[in-house]
Every structure is written in C-alpha cells, then in structure tokens.
Amino acid sequence: MTDARRLYRLHASIVVLGALVVGIAVGVAATRFRLDPGLGGACADLLSRHDVLASGCLALLALGAVATTRFSVTFLRLVRAHCRVTSNLRPVACRDDVVIVEGSRPSAFCAGLLRPRIYVSAGATTALEPDELASVIAHERHHAVRRDPLRLVLAASAASGLFFLPVLRRLLDRYADLAEFAADDAACETPDRRRALAAALLVFDDAGAGVAPQRVDRLCGSGQGVDLPLTPLFWAAVAMTGLAGATAAVAMGAARGSVAVLVVAPHAVVGLALAMTPILLIGALRHRTVRAA
Image (cartoon, rainbow, N blue to C red; front, side, top):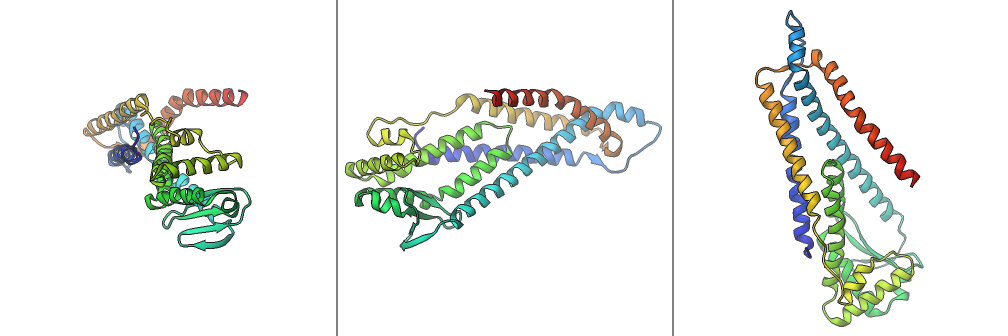
C-alpha cells in the first residue's frame, strides 16, 4: 500500500469496530448484575450456576475499564509531551506559518494539535540552500494541512486502549512512514525539488536527526511502498470475533436471570485471579528475558 489516507482509514475502521465491540461487551455485562444479594435457601445453587457467568461479566467490564484507562492515560501523556516540546521552543522570527526557533543543529518539524505550525531551527536556515529549505518547508506544510500531529496522537492512544489488537500498532508505524512519503511527494513537484529535498534530508541526517534512509532512496527513485501486516490483521479479526462471541455467550447465559453481584463477585474474582496467574508469569518471564538480552 502506498496511500497514507487509505491506511489511516483502515486503522480508523479497525479502531471504530474494536471500540464498538468493547462498548457492546461492557453494556451487556453491566446490565447483567443486580445489587441486591438475593440470599436465600438457593444460595449454593446460585453460585454453582452463575460463577462462570459472573466471571465472564467481570472480565468484560475489566476489559472496558482497562481499555478506557489506557486510552485516556496515553492521550494525556502524549498531549502533555507535545505541549512541553512546543513550550520549550524559543522563537527567533516568524514568516507566515513558519516559526524560526533557536538551535544550531539543522531541524524542521510540524507541531501543534489543533493549530499545527511549522518550526525550523536557525541552524537549518544557514545549513540549507534556499531551494532545499523551501522543499523542507513544503514537506512540513503538508503535515500541517493534514493535521498529522493530531492524527498520530489519536491513533497512538487508540492503539494503546485497544491493546488486544496489536495490529493497530503495526498500522500506526506504517502510517507514519506513508505520511512522510506523502509529504515528500507533496513537496516535490519537479525533479529538482526532489533532489533538493533529498539533499536536505542528508544534511539533517549528518546532524543526527535520524532521517529514515527509505525516504532518501525513494526520492532518488529506488524506494518501495509499505506492505500491509496481513497476519496481524487476521488475528485482529479473530480477537474481535472471539470477544463478540464471548459477549453473545454472556448475553444468552444471563437471559435466564440476572446475577447477584454481591454473592458471586468474590468467587468470580478468585477465578479470574487464578486464570490470570499463568499469563502474568509468562509476561514476567518474557520481561526478564528481554532485559537480560
């Protein structure tokens, strides 16, 4: 795939579908609990019949709570980091939508979520030729028009919230690459502009900006597109289908009667804790393995 807009729409479609499935799951689980304990002679029968159902309801509610928390925390963290970066800049001059900031190292970027602006370091204005600087500004202007900073923040927050869909992180990485390619194409109307932008990227790379070599190769005519992660897409479909199936099972099981949460919840929590123990142990072992490597 070579179109950033189509890839972003695919990412957004998966996010909307995943959020819809989680929302339905939480709604179904939340409506299956009642607060009165309903203690009586059939208490033991209630526990035996509804332990599994209560565990499923609590699992769905926990999934919704974790997804919402992760999205909110990630979004706030990224917004604060973005604001911190822009607030630490020291403007030197302003030319239309381009702000010249202090800094001897050549750099240029687009920042701002609601009102994106183009920031160019003073070092870039002296290190780059006029045509190179113009191509860099045209590149960043495309990011500003597309509101790519806001898009990336929302996409990263959604990928964190829907953590059970790892494909979102893969698609986000690929969208970031395609967004750079699209901005390069928008800035290069002629072969001379392509060479000028490639030369500017080499200057940035020599200054330690960490420019992706694929961009330079593509500007020189030897680049390739970005492949879709087909296997993660398949597993994302499986995950959402499984979650939808679990929601349907809870809904059908609870159709026979609501669950007395004060009676069943302790048993369900213990069951969930026992079920999560192997997963937590595997995660801890993987973390230790990665740190040791």
